[in-house]
Image (tube, rainbow over all chains, first blue to last red; front, side):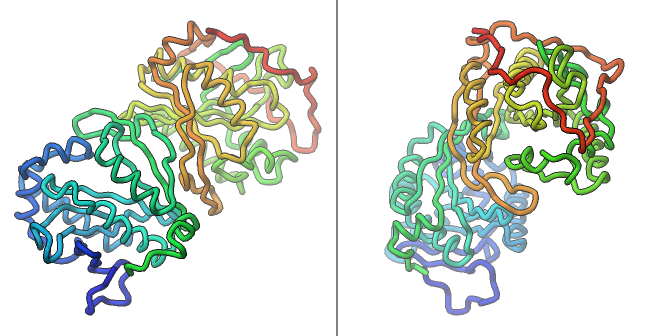
Length: 213
Length: 238
């Protein structure tokens, strides 16, 4: 992971992270509310995304503004390193918003929790694993958290496959399925599969750690 | 919403904030108040209460949770015929997450009352509360992995209720005092409960007319059960 040259060494989270094919830009930076609204309200295939997410299509731009405000507040509080995912030069759709990801930091538990959603046209490119490698390194190498966790709604097989692959590669494991873990805004309740990686497991699996940073 | 008294074969569960005064609660759960409090709290998420203000505040919290339907906390009191009948044997609570239709159980039993399968007896009674009365979807409980005794007890009653071990979830609880621990999580669904249990023996009484707590044994008295310890007397109900 490469930081921008103008990165402020005082920042808890890096403002920009570059991986081989992606640029993760802080939610604290310039994000176009209306562009984000277009995606959250009616992007092609967005219902395939929200089907597995605890949020629904945005009804108006103010909802999107509220989402971005909350993301920025969590960034400022040091409780969530939220990023816009953009494919880099050479990728199809370079520079566009491909989705959002984050590392939610539960400092009292020494846990970092990965989250991601990608627009459907950016599925199937292995972006999930690439961003996970970078954010897991952020969690362990820079933030010295003890455990990184992630999960998916039971039945979301695409996410399950992606998560299994990178969790295995990074030394973690599948912990189990927590029943009735998530209540969605439409009132439905969902089970959630949990995965976790300990810092020690990550170091062992990656021969001392990854070096995208 | 919640009955103030639940009677099982051998136990009375009485609404905690009514049945137990903060001073009685402190005498049983305060740091250094009994010889066994450290052992009893080795695997729970709280530490021995440092001063009576803490049990006072906790009692008020129990009352607030009861009123807001977030939680129901009961004192566990052995009935006539049991060793230590009428005394405060610990407490048990149900935390409600209405959005996810989930009730999560917790329990703390005082050492003189260990080994009598009281935990299972109150769990089955609370399952009846959670499913038959409150119509929730899921009953869950979490145990710290090192607490082998509780794991054995929980696996037994969860199995009896038709549920299962969900997994070991890492870094899930911050213990008072700073440690972070994993949990083994177990759950029973409403459907599993319906197909495995018929008529658990538990009687609900809406209002606690008169608390029956005889007292808390003073710290300096070594209090031995009148009967020898024996394994669970419960009959499988399936």
